[in-house]
Image: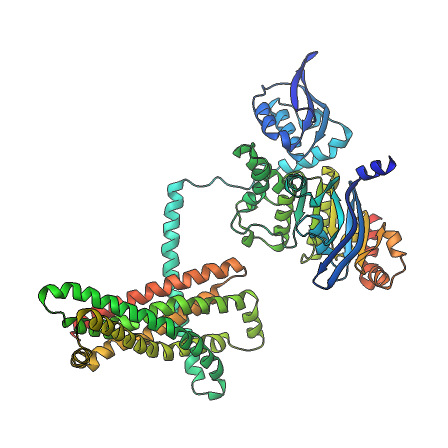
Length: 370
Length: 265
């Protein structure tokens, strides 16, 4: 192995220091410590005994020279190391400019909170703007059947509706069973087990049918929309469409929005039925309620009003999910990482908004006494 | 004995390299020497296997046959030998290949932290900043993420990371592709300066004729699954092969040559 690097005082001349050994990155840690301990005031540094030197070594040599208050030009060097040292001197010349001190932590936190709030506000405004834009394009397109994009719409109906049906039905069935069990546990104490049927009917007609479907689609469809449009955006396909005189809103957003508007109420209805089936299964198998009794009870509990209170939310949810999914897709900027971030954001936003809207609707209808 | 001394002078020695993808033969019996301290430009048509060659030399791809020695060690040794080689080589991929979740400075610190864990934080930061200055980036770029940089700056940042360990051998994959002519010329100058100052050996894949004329010491032309010819620019230009003739005597080559002679005057 080569000699370890050193810088020591010349025994013959106390204002002259001698550097020798292997000044390379491998020894940088030792050298750094050595150099930081150097006393000030010397006249010259003799570095001609340095056998090998790289950029890290050159930087440390300059550091040593500075601590000894020796100018870089007063460092004696081997010829082969001169150009390296010059390059490093030049690079270190601008040491003072640039990178600013990071602000204190509490200010960064405050700034982060502010940024999140401003971002949320901006997001909401952008979403409203996007809603307006889409509605305007829809109004423009409706009277011109030649511009209707029927094939993509049907395609998206299959993707978001038909393909999601098994999952939606299964989950609704299971939730129906859970609600039945839950209700039975409480109601058994009052000897009112039969009211489990009413509970399931109200719950699924007014809330769960549509809410479950919406949450499922928010996770499944909003993310898919964002990824599809985001990938197109990052490959400049959207820009290409614009330069060809095509409207990405008409081409990409309207088919998805309309498909979801059609599909979500249907899925919600089927989810409601699946929920009933789940409740029925538990009631029959575990609570000892006869199927006939269950169905009669359901028929008595179901009114058009309950059904409409539930179903009226479906288009709202559909529009929320479709618009957020598409808008987040358009927000993708360049990189693949951005597609991932936007997809996450789309799912989080759409699920949050769906639940917020549902809660507000519940309060609204309750106050109206519907 | 003379062959031993010759070997010492070679930074990379490839003999009988064969690379196949299924039935698709990319290299067959490819020989290549890169001497210490030179900039070797590697050219060849699209799909001629320039990048595959680089990946084989770097040990990222195991060739079907052949012997590759880098800095006197066999690449296919694996394990510790390969790890030592990694410490002595730097690579700049086509678009910089910076880690997108790290800032520029953190990117440059990664190799330092991996191979030199004994270096403390302050020194590591300073070394990283030195590299960033060396490649001509402002220090304000330190805290930025790769997505916030322009293509030229990303390449420079990638070069800073490649230089982090003070390597003896540098691999560059199309360093000037996608840069504007002024940026590309500046990058060429930077490469030449750094190579001379740091005593680097450079393996440079390029399509840029200006780069070839401006900074390469020797050029290797890849075609027909092997190195067609390897030598100084004059030798290559005189080489009798239609592709080589088209490449080095087309209008773009004439222009590059012209601008080069003008610069020297």
